Amino acid sequence: MAASSPAVELQAGQRSVRLSSPDRVMFPAVGVTKQELAEYYLAVGDGIVRALRERPCMLHRYPKGLEGAKVHQKKLPPGAPAWVQTVRVHFPRFDRDVDELCVTDVADVVWAVQMSSVEFHPWNSRRADVERPDEWRIDLDPMPDAPFERVRSTARVVQQVLGELGAVGWPKTSGGAGLHVYVRVRPDHGFEAVRRAALAFAREVERRVPDDVTTTWWRRDRDPAAVFLDFNQNARDHTIAAAYSERGTPDARVSTPVAWEEIDDVDPGAFTVRTVPERFARLGDLHAGIDDAVFDLAPLLEWADRDERAGAETPPEAD
Image (cartoon, helix red, strand yellow):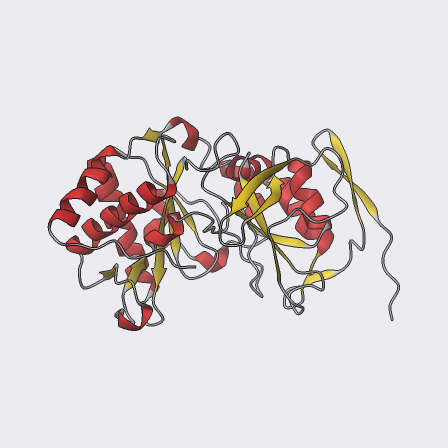
């Protein structure tokens, strides 16, 4: 067995974080090491902290790299330094409380990498009131036969409807086959209301491009060539990868903020742990203004009421 490489100390903001086994290969297909992953997060530090700040955060850990098992880590891993902060959340299904990672500084992110974390999946609420989301998430999830051009064209309709509502959407690649659009909202409502609003918006997009988009609840009933607008990503404890989160893909893709003008030509495969740092240094964080563009969900909740009066049903939340 090969000897482990000596630990290194990485400067993360005002803190020094110890990284053991820095040469461990986390992404065998492209040779990305644990240290390279940590240095990637340092390079996009302002962006990843903005995406995660003060949110309960689930970690996707790969203790043996991508070729090993993935661990969905809700509870903060043991051995955290005293400066790593947490937020307590309750899981009614199991009737238990869990202290999840609560990022406030880039050092928290680097420490999570030390614990073999690759992906960061935050809640859409913050610790000030974890039961009231301040982020509405629009997930453009293509079915298996949907070409990516259909995702692009759907995103353009999403932008149009948001503009008519007076809402500002902040798009990013998912790091997989789809796109996400985030909207800051006033934390005036619980998860159920935000999910109803998201469904009402999705139905409006579906009405405009019914051949391309579906809100059909059961996967088996969906058109395999449609783009599913996954409103359920706004349900309580449903999380998706943050902006700037690395993804557990063989090519080390990153969920990357993009400008609306890039949508027509965007190639999700072009954004990786090795290409995004240069882009970030050149463009900065394209989501930097997200906290200044806050939307009131009231119009969407009126749409939801209208749809329900017309007979539309709100599907139950999926586990």
